[in-house]
Image: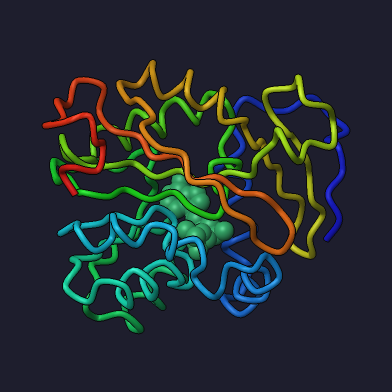
Length: 238
Ligand SMILES: C[S@@+](CC[C@H](N)C(=O)[O-])C[C@H]1O[C@@H](n2cnc3c(N)ncnc32)[C@H](O)[C@@H]1O
Protein backbone atom coordinates (compact mmCIF):
# COMPACT_ATOMS: atom_id res chain seq x y z
CA UNK A 1 0.00 0.00 0.00
CA UNK A 2 1.60 3.24 -1.20
CA UNK A 3 0.40 6.64 0.07
CA UNK A 4 -0.45 9.38 -2.42
CA UNK A 5 -1.66 12.97 -2.20
CA UNK A 6 -5.51 12.96 -2.35
CA UNK A 7 -6.62 13.77 -5.88
CA UNK A 8 -9.97 15.29 -4.88
CA UNK A 9 -10.90 18.00 -2.37
CA UNK A 10 -10.93 16.36 1.06
CA UNK A 11 -14.41 15.76 2.49
CA UNK A 12 -15.52 17.35 5.80
CA UNK A 13 -15.93 13.91 7.37
CA UNK A 14 -13.75 10.86 6.68
CA UNK A 15 -14.06 8.52 9.65
CA UNK A 16 -17.25 6.71 8.59
CA UNK A 17 -15.86 6.08 5.09
CA UNK A 18 -12.55 4.89 6.50
CA UNK A 19 -14.38 2.42 8.76
CA UNK A 20 -15.58 0.52 5.67
CA UNK A 21 -12.01 -0.63 5.27
CA UNK A 22 -11.92 -2.07 8.79
CA UNK A 23 -15.31 -3.72 8.30
CA UNK A 24 -13.85 -5.79 5.49
CA UNK A 25 -10.33 -6.18 6.80
CA UNK A 26 -9.30 -9.30 8.72
CA UNK A 27 -7.62 -8.94 12.13
CA UNK A 28 -4.63 -10.82 10.66
CA UNK A 29 -4.07 -8.03 8.08
CA UNK A 30 -4.08 -5.37 10.83
CA UNK A 31 -1.53 -7.45 12.75
CA UNK A 32 0.70 -7.51 9.64
CA UNK A 33 0.56 -3.67 9.46
CA UNK A 34 1.34 -3.39 13.17
CA UNK A 35 4.40 -5.60 12.65
CA UNK A 36 5.63 -3.53 9.72
CA UNK A 37 5.26 -0.31 11.75
CA UNK A 38 7.18 -1.86 14.67
CA UNK A 39 4.12 -1.55 16.90
CA UNK A 40 3.25 -5.21 17.44
CA UNK A 41 5.89 -5.52 20.18
CA UNK A 42 4.07 -2.85 22.22
CA UNK A 43 7.11 -0.52 22.12
CA UNK A 44 4.75 2.49 22.26
CA UNK A 45 3.03 1.12 25.38
CA UNK A 46 6.44 0.63 27.01
CA UNK A 47 6.92 4.41 26.75
CA UNK A 48 3.78 4.81 28.84
CA UNK A 49 4.85 2.37 31.54
CA UNK A 50 4.87 4.84 34.50
CA UNK A 51 1.34 5.99 33.60
CA UNK A 52 0.05 2.46 33.05
CA UNK A 53 1.52 1.26 36.36
CA UNK A 54 -0.04 4.09 38.37
CA UNK A 55 -3.47 4.12 36.77
CA UNK A 56 -6.50 2.13 37.87
CA UNK A 57 -8.52 2.42 34.66
CA UNK A 58 -7.91 2.87 30.94
CA UNK A 59 -10.12 3.39 27.89
CA UNK A 60 -8.50 2.37 24.63
CA UNK A 61 -10.08 4.00 21.57
CA UNK A 62 -10.19 1.74 18.51
CA UNK A 63 -9.58 -1.64 20.19
CA UNK A 64 -8.98 -3.34 16.84
CA UNK A 65 -7.27 -6.74 17.30
CA UNK A 66 -6.28 -6.13 20.94
CA UNK A 67 -2.69 -4.90 20.72
CA UNK A 68 -3.13 -2.20 23.37
CA UNK A 69 -5.26 -4.41 25.66
CA UNK A 70 -2.58 -7.10 25.55
CA UNK A 71 0.40 -4.82 26.31
CA UNK A 72 -1.42 -2.66 28.88
CA UNK A 73 -2.35 -5.91 30.73
CA UNK A 74 1.25 -7.16 30.47
CA UNK A 75 2.57 -3.93 32.04
CA UNK A 76 -0.11 -3.68 34.76
CA UNK A 77 -2.17 -6.86 35.29
CA UNK A 78 -4.43 -5.09 37.82
CA UNK A 79 -5.43 -2.30 35.41
CA UNK A 80 -9.16 -2.24 34.58
CA UNK A 81 -9.16 -2.15 30.79
CA UNK A 82 -12.02 -0.92 28.61
CA UNK A 83 -11.86 -0.58 24.84
CA UNK A 84 -14.27 0.90 22.34
CA UNK A 85 -14.32 -0.52 18.83
CA UNK A 86 -16.88 0.38 16.20
CA UNK A 87 -16.49 -2.60 13.87
CA UNK A 88 -18.65 -5.53 15.01
CA UNK A 89 -16.44 -8.44 13.94
CA UNK A 90 -13.40 -6.87 15.65
CA UNK A 91 -15.38 -6.06 18.83
CA UNK A 92 -16.72 -9.65 18.96
CA UNK A 93 -13.22 -11.03 18.57
CA UNK A 94 -11.97 -8.81 21.43
CA UNK A 95 -14.81 -9.98 23.71
CA UNK A 96 -13.83 -13.62 23.11
CA UNK A 97 -10.09 -13.13 23.36
CA UNK A 98 -9.95 -10.77 26.36
CA UNK A 99 -12.73 -11.73 28.82
CA UNK A 100 -11.02 -9.62 31.55
CA UNK A 101 -11.57 -6.42 29.50
CA UNK A 102 -14.78 -4.46 29.01
CA UNK A 103 -15.43 -4.18 25.28
CA UNK A 104 -17.84 -1.52 24.05
CA UNK A 105 -18.99 -1.93 20.48
CA UNK A 106 -19.63 1.61 19.30
CA UNK A 107 -18.43 4.82 17.72
CA UNK A 108 -16.35 7.05 19.99
CA UNK A 109 -17.82 10.15 18.29
CA UNK A 110 -21.35 9.27 19.41
CA UNK A 111 -20.50 7.33 22.57
CA UNK A 112 -22.34 8.62 25.65
CA UNK A 113 -21.24 7.61 29.12
CA UNK A 114 -20.63 9.26 32.49
CA UNK A 115 -17.76 6.90 33.20
CA UNK A 116 -14.28 8.43 33.45
CA UNK A 117 -10.86 6.82 33.10
CA UNK A 118 -7.35 7.61 34.38
CA UNK A 119 -5.96 7.03 30.90
CA UNK A 120 -7.71 7.48 27.56
CA UNK A 121 -5.51 6.32 24.69
CA UNK A 122 -5.64 7.05 20.97
CA UNK A 123 -2.49 5.36 19.69
CA UNK A 124 -0.97 4.27 16.33
CA UNK A 125 -1.72 7.75 14.86
CA UNK A 126 -5.42 6.87 14.43
CA UNK A 127 -6.17 10.55 15.05
CA UNK A 128 -5.36 10.81 11.29
CA UNK A 129 -8.44 8.73 10.49
CA UNK A 130 -10.62 11.68 11.55
CA UNK A 131 -11.14 14.92 9.57
CA UNK A 132 -10.36 18.30 11.16
CA UNK A 133 -14.02 18.75 12.07
CA UNK A 134 -14.18 15.23 13.54
CA UNK A 135 -10.95 15.79 15.49
CA UNK A 136 -12.67 18.57 17.47
CA UNK A 137 -15.66 16.32 18.29
CA UNK A 138 -13.33 13.46 19.15
CA UNK A 139 -11.04 15.42 21.47
CA UNK A 140 -14.02 17.04 23.21
CA UNK A 141 -15.31 13.53 23.85
CA UNK A 142 -11.93 12.31 25.14
CA UNK A 143 -11.77 15.33 27.48
CA UNK A 144 -15.14 14.30 28.98
CA UNK A 145 -13.96 10.72 29.46
CA UNK A 146 -10.76 11.43 31.39
CA UNK A 147 -10.58 11.93 35.17
CA UNK A 148 -9.42 15.26 36.63
CA UNK A 149 -5.95 13.89 37.38
CA UNK A 150 -5.85 11.60 34.35
CA UNK A 151 -4.25 11.83 30.91
CA UNK A 152 -5.48 11.64 27.33
CA UNK A 153 -2.67 10.13 25.24
CA UNK A 154 -2.53 10.82 21.51
CA UNK A 155 0.16 9.23 19.35
CA UNK A 156 1.28 10.96 16.15
CA UNK A 157 4.18 10.96 13.70
CA UNK A 158 6.70 13.76 14.32
CA UNK A 159 5.91 15.83 11.24
CA UNK A 160 8.74 18.26 12.02
CA UNK A 161 11.26 15.53 11.26
CA UNK A 162 9.15 13.66 8.70
CA UNK A 163 6.91 15.70 6.44
CA UNK A 164 6.89 14.95 2.73
CA UNK A 165 5.05 18.20 1.88
CA UNK A 166 7.22 20.67 3.80
CA UNK A 167 7.38 21.73 7.41
CA UNK A 168 4.94 24.61 7.25
CA UNK A 169 1.82 22.55 6.60
CA UNK A 170 -0.16 21.70 9.76
CA UNK A 171 -1.43 18.40 8.42
CA UNK A 172 -0.06 15.55 6.30
CA UNK A 173 -3.03 14.40 4.20
CA UNK A 174 -2.79 11.28 2.10
CA UNK A 175 -4.84 8.51 0.56
CA UNK A 176 -4.06 4.81 0.43
CA UNK A 177 -5.67 2.49 -2.11
CA UNK A 178 -6.41 -0.88 -0.54
CA UNK A 179 -8.13 -4.02 -1.76
CA UNK A 180 -11.20 -2.78 0.17
CA UNK A 181 -11.28 0.77 -1.23
CA UNK A 182 -9.33 3.89 -0.33
CA UNK A 183 -8.53 5.17 3.15
CA UNK A 184 -7.85 8.85 3.82
CA UNK A 185 -5.48 10.01 6.55
CA UNK A 186 -5.20 13.58 7.83
CA UNK A 187 -2.28 13.43 10.24
CA UNK A 188 -1.93 16.64 12.24
CA UNK A 189 1.21 18.30 13.57
CA UNK A 190 1.49 18.46 17.33
CA UNK A 191 1.03 22.26 17.15
CA UNK A 192 -2.31 21.76 15.39
CA UNK A 193 -3.38 19.25 18.04
CA UNK A 194 -2.38 21.64 20.82
CA UNK A 195 -4.73 24.26 19.32
CA UNK A 196 -7.64 21.82 19.05
CA UNK A 197 -7.02 20.41 22.53
CA UNK A 198 -7.00 23.91 24.06
CA UNK A 199 -10.43 24.57 22.51
CA UNK A 200 -11.63 21.28 24.02
CA UNK A 201 -10.42 22.02 27.56
CA UNK A 202 -7.16 20.05 27.50
CA UNK A 203 -3.53 21.10 27.81
CA UNK A 204 -0.43 19.11 26.89
CA UNK A 205 1.95 18.54 29.79
CA UNK A 206 4.34 15.99 28.32
CA UNK A 207 5.62 14.96 24.91
CA UNK A 208 7.34 11.58 24.67
CA UNK A 209 9.45 11.31 21.51
CA UNK A 210 10.60 7.88 20.38
CA UNK A 211 11.79 6.07 17.25
CA UNK A 212 10.16 3.02 15.70
CA UNK A 213 11.45 1.44 12.51
CA UNK A 214 13.34 4.62 11.58
CA UNK A 215 10.34 6.93 12.03
CA UNK A 216 10.12 9.43 14.88
CA UNK A 217 6.80 9.28 16.70
CA UNK A 218 5.45 11.36 19.53
CA UNK A 219 3.04 10.65 22.31
CA UNK A 220 1.26 13.75 23.49
CA UNK A 221 -0.10 13.59 27.03
CA UNK A 222 -2.96 15.96 27.80
CA UNK A 223 -4.66 16.75 31.07
CA UNK A 224 -7.74 18.81 31.80
CA UNK A 225 -6.99 22.55 31.64
CA UNK A 226 -8.52 23.21 35.04
CA UNK A 227 -6.97 20.26 36.89
CA UNK A 228 -4.83 21.47 39.78
CA UNK A 229 -1.62 19.55 40.17
CA UNK A 230 -0.18 19.14 43.65
CA UNK A 231 3.33 20.23 42.57
CA UNK A 232 5.27 21.38 39.53
CA UNK A 233 5.93 17.71 38.79
CA UNK A 234 3.18 16.83 36.31
CA UNK A 235 3.53 13.13 37.13
CA UNK A 236 2.97 13.70 40.85
CA UNK A 237 -0.54 12.30 40.74
CA UNK A 238 0.62 9.10 39.06
C1 LIG B 1 -5.10 1.17 13.29
S1 LIG B 1 -6.39 0.30 14.09
C2 LIG B 1 -5.75 -0.02 15.66
C3 LIG B 1 -5.51 0.96 16.62
C4 LIG B 1 -5.26 0.46 18.03
N1 LIG B 1 -5.71 1.53 18.87
C5 LIG B 1 -3.80 0.16 18.27
O1 LIG B 1 -3.06 1.09 18.62
O2 LIG B 1 -3.38 -0.99 18.08
C6 LIG B 1 -7.70 1.50 14.28
C7 LIG B 1 -8.97 0.93 14.88
O3 LIG B 1 -9.78 2.04 15.29
C8 LIG B 1 -11.13 1.73 15.01
N2 LIG B 1 -11.89 2.99 14.88
C9 LIG B 1 -11.73 3.94 13.93
N3 LIG B 1 -12.60 4.94 14.12
C10 LIG B 1 -13.35 4.61 15.23
C11 LIG B 1 -14.42 5.24 15.91
N4 LIG B 1 -14.95 6.39 15.47
N5 LIG B 1 -14.95 4.64 17.02
C12 LIG B 1 -14.44 3.45 17.44
N6 LIG B 1 -13.43 2.79 16.81
C13 LIG B 1 -12.88 3.36 15.72
C14 LIG B 1 -11.06 0.95 13.70
O4 LIG B 1 -12.23 0.19 13.47
C15 LIG B 1 -9.80 0.11 13.92
O5 LIG B 1 -10.11 -1.12 14.49
